[in-house]
Image (cartoon, rainbow, N blue to C red; front, top):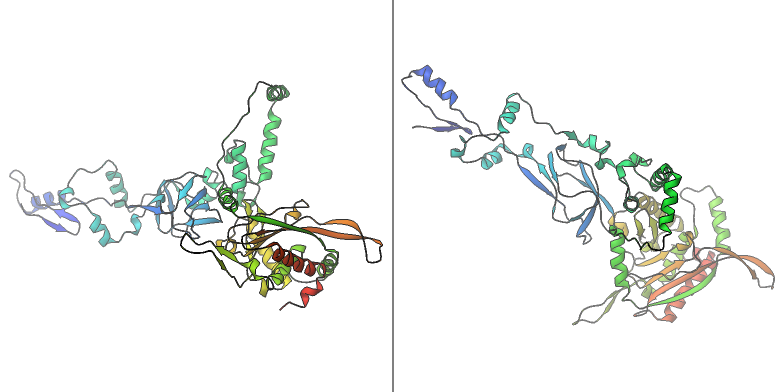
Length: 476
C-alpha cells in the first residue's frame, strides 16, 4: 500500500474487486481523500496584574456573554478593586465560550476570567502543529464535524449568537449598569437589577431609581397586608432577623486600613478658627468673572496646610517601622500631596492633590474639581489614590461641628474640618459682632509627633486662615 501526504490531506489509492483502469482508480482515489476539521483553540483569558499590589477584584458587570464574538480592545467586563473601577478589554479576536464568574463575584489576579475561542488568530503553520497524527485522520468524525464542514465548504463561518454591541445596549443582565453602592442597596432589598429601569447615563441604575421601585412595590400591597405586616413586626415573640451581606471592595479595604490604624497611638488637638476674613475674601473673588471653578474654604485650607508644612516638615513624613533587626526610621518627603476625603458612590475614597506647594489656590480648585468629577463617575485612577502625605477631611460639608479623624499608616497627621457656623463675639472694642467660625481637629501619630509640634503647626495654619493676606506673601 502506497500513501502520501498532500498538504494536510492523506491520499490512499485503493482498488476493489476487478475494477481497474485509470478512471476507476481515479474515482477510488477521489473517494479516499480525508480532511481534518478545523481545530477549536480555546484560550483562557487571564486577569492581569493591574498594579498597586491588588490581588483580587469584584466583577461589577459583564459586557459579553457566551457565544458572543469579540475583537481586540472590545470591553469584556468592568471590575472594581479597593482603589478604582477598571474596564478590562480583550487581547484576542474570537468567540466567548465560558464566563468563569458571575456579576459581583470576586476574581483573583492571574486566574481565568473567561475562555475565548481564538481559532481565527491561529496561523496555518501553527494549525499544522496542532493537527492530530496522520493515523487519526481517517477516524470517525464527531457529530458536529459534518455541520462545520458543510459551513466551510459553503464559504460560511459559524456566527456567534450575539455580539458585543447587542449585549452592551441590550436588556440582559450583562447590560445593567450600577455603582457598587446601588448594587448593595439592591441586594439589601432583594431586588433584581433587571427589574429596575435605570434613568442615569447609558441606562445606569441610580439610587433614586431603586427608591422609586421600592415605593411602587410598596404601593401595590393592600392595606390589609400592610396592617398584618405591622402586627407581625410589633409581635413581642418575633426574634431578630439578621442577614449576611458581603463587604464591597472599598469597604473591605477600609476594614483592613482602619484595623491597622488601631495600632497607631493617636492624640487629638482641636481649636476654633475665625474664618470671617476668609469668607469675605472668598465672596469677593468668586464675584469676579474668572475662569475655572468657584473657590471654597477647602481650597484655602489645603494651601495653608502646605505652607505650614514648609516650617514643620515632620508632619509630612511617614514611618518605616523596620523589623526585629532594624530600628524604625522616618522617611522625609519633599512634595506635599494633600489627600481629600470624599464621599463617593463607592464609599469613602481619598484622592490627593499632587505637589500643592507649587500650585496656586485657583489651580488647587481646578485639581479638586477634576478629582470630584472622576470620583462621582467612579473613574478615579490609581495614581490619584496613592502617594498622599497628609489628609484633610472636610466632614463639615455634610454636618458635624467636631470630629476625631483617624490616621492611616502612610501618614503622621490628618486634619478634620467641622461645619462653619455664625456666632456672636466681642471685638477689640468690647462690642458684640457677628463672626463665622469653624472647628479644626487634628490627629497625629504620637510615636513621632509630640503635642508641642502639633500645636505649633495648628497655630501656623490658624494664622494663615484668619489672615488670608499672609498667604499671598508666600505664594510662588
